[in-house]
Amino acid sequence: MCGIAGEFRWDGSPADMGGIERMCERLARRGPDAAGTWQDGAIVLGHRRLAIIDLSERSRQPMVDAGLGLALVFNGTIYNYPELRAVLLGRGHRFKSDGDTEVILRAYAEWGEACVERLHGAFAFAIWDGRARSLFLARDRLGIKPLYFAQDGGRFRFASNVQALLAAGGVDTAIDPVALHCQFTLHGVVPPPHTLLRGVRKLEQGTTLRIDADGRATQRRYWRLHAARSGRSGAPLTERQWTEEIHAALRCAVKKRLEIADVKVGVLLSGGLDSSLLVALLAEQGVSDLMTFSIGFEHQPEEEGDEFRYSDAVAEYFGTRHHKYVIDNSEVLRRLPEAVDCMAEPMVSQDVVAFYLLSEQVAHTVKVVQSGQGGDEVFGGYSWHQAMAAEDGVPPLERFRHHYFDRDHAEYLQMVAPQYAGEDHAAALLAQQLDAPYADGFVDRMLRAEATFLITDDPVKRVDNMTMAWGLEARVPFLDHHLVELAAAMPPELKLGSGGKHVLKRIARGLVPDFVIDRPKGYFPVPALKYVRGPFLEFMRDILDSRACRERGVYRRDYVEKLLAEPESHFTRIQGSKLWHLALMEYWLQRNVDR
Image (cartoon, rainbow, N blue to C red; front, top):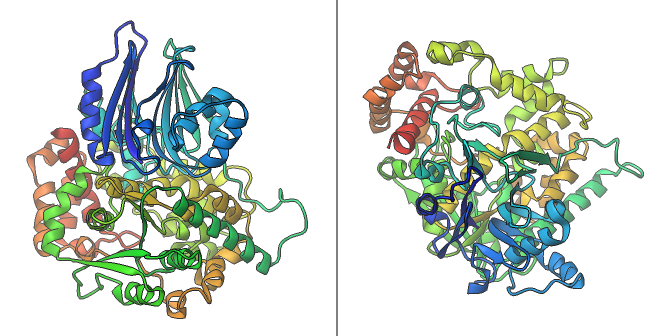
């Protein structure tokens, strides 16, 4: 896992090395182990390295092969690189390193742009093809690794976060109205290519992009998720057979994310089903000295701030070397600016700061962790999945609107200034996802939208950003694309049954304690960002009453005053604070754009 950056020009000017150096400075936390740049006239590449596989100098980046005319910068991990390396050796390729980076370079030399279809992992990379004078970029199927870009006349820049692009200069920072609508409708999910800033785009997951010598761009979608049983050959599987197949695929995903590393791997243990199941599968494979990590916060009268009674019990059950951290509210408020500085885009989920503070502590002990993100989205674990599925006869988009949208379009129009009061963009984009082919029924369409449209920004982006802020790589077995494809073809009742995640509960039974399986659905609670009062209310009031906020003019003042007057009376449908949503976006702009 690393940070990547680059600039390609086709206007006759050399690429700006100074701009790339500034970009790499803003990526330093993603890659604290080494830095490198490489230039060939109109192209310059930059890299910050987090050494996980082949820790030697031979895997430093940018990786250049003068004989092939190729140069590569890469962020991520390729879990099938040993198999690909063997194939490439058989085809006459010779390797100078032992890691996955060179495998990508030689896979491109062998198969061209189709190489991405052979890669199994989490990745974002860019390859300069000196012979074709073209730049090729790719992002993994589920969007686990980020890739942002900006184009300005005859110049194309890319980076692992928005802050790096801003550091290079020349970015149009006007607010994108489509992104703004999605930000406040889909609790921070802004689907690609949009970002909140009009001049910054992001590459869609499962997609490649080629920039030719004349600046012409060609984008190709190389992967789509099918959520249908009609295309599967053979007799329908029984529930037992589905359970066995999912169990085998999950076991394989966990094993690969353990073995493909030359450093110690731990687990972020919330005490929920998904993270507990990861611990069980690692213990099942005989991992010794298994390290687990949990975090908790101050309780509020309405909600507890930790789930230690579950995580402690799981750690004791499996005999892990457990690390537990308790954070005071005063510390949350003091450290909040740091977390916002590390958000590539505004993220309103209250657990963002939890991941940030937990990752800081974990990074003192390990460089890689496995995490349970994706289990709920892929296997139907959220309460709104049940509620949507129960509304039989209601149009698909309206089901989402009733149970998922943070605010309806009418309220959005009351919230924003007239210049931002446009169409119902979020609904239109979500409708496209729900209407796409290759899905059998509503539940299939709903969960496919979660896995391929919503999850990339929430929670995948926040996990990447907050762990990489501390040079910590988070691996997410539940988002292994083979497992996701298998789950998408599974009958809906095997996902939504038993109150959600039926098949995972069947797998877990006998592996983890029953009280973990049968417990109510939990979340990663930071109550002070939900029940806004005291110093947190004053903090948000100062942001929204600031001169910068008023001059920006995004929010209508009457709406802001209504939320400030009764902050605990205005929650979204999934119980987020609407006041926090407004304050967070404005604060992100002040910390990352205005400065």
